[in-house]
Image 1 (tube, rainbow, N blue to C red):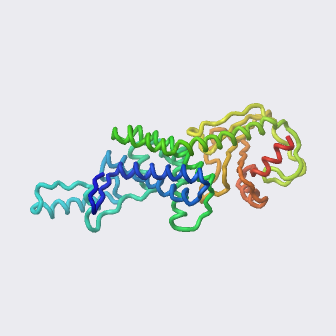
Image 2: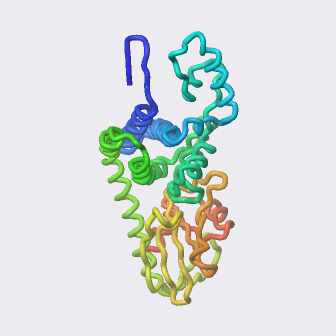
Image 3: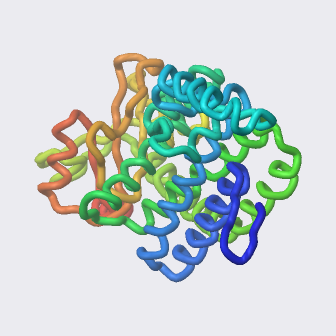
Length: 332
């Protein structure tokens, strides 16, 4: 970065580093103070840092990959070089110099950017339906809703989402950014800014997972009176669970706990802190590898109305809110 009294010149990596550090600094402060406005800012900063980092990955491979219309960029660069051939023969204009010209070609939009990075750079972490990609897509939904519409911002959900993005994102950049200073200086600074809130989020997630595992381990085929799992009933029989385990979040998208039942069925559990689902952002995106004989249980760790529980149950899931978890714990 170069700076004088009247201007500021910021490179791609400096821009990326500043945005990610600032975003996770605000995330840490917002989580600590339970301040949704700071988390709103954190969403913008972190998302911008991700966008700039992906553009850097494309640029270090081929500068033209950052343009929405590569052919248009090539044509304009040829014209720029031709126009300045006699005026400035010593200047060799490159593709990125087009962004300083009038009527410059557009850089690639975020949705196409992440697809292009995944395909052209063979980054499996960014492929559609991968764990990191789904989390970035969710962050993009939040960012777009905030920028263009009104939104109900779930503080715990946003804080958890930013926590889950942190490590896999930084690991991706560590492996692929070809700049030693960025890797050795910037990434540790981002982690340092984020660590207190990351530790708190990890603890919150772990405690919820352990709570649900302890509850599942009490499933012995008992009858439970009243409404349960979004179903109206007077004697729902719980499955007989024989084995439970936590799932590695980097490998199994949308599943937190897997359990086996005496009836040879597989119980898949997803734990969410919010019932806010964006268009197309449904629970249990990938379950095919567990076969067809599965039970999908969506646990949302906040109070919900019976109407909202039944709406979610209509997509073919067993659904429980925090109120129901509290009730089950008392009954079992």
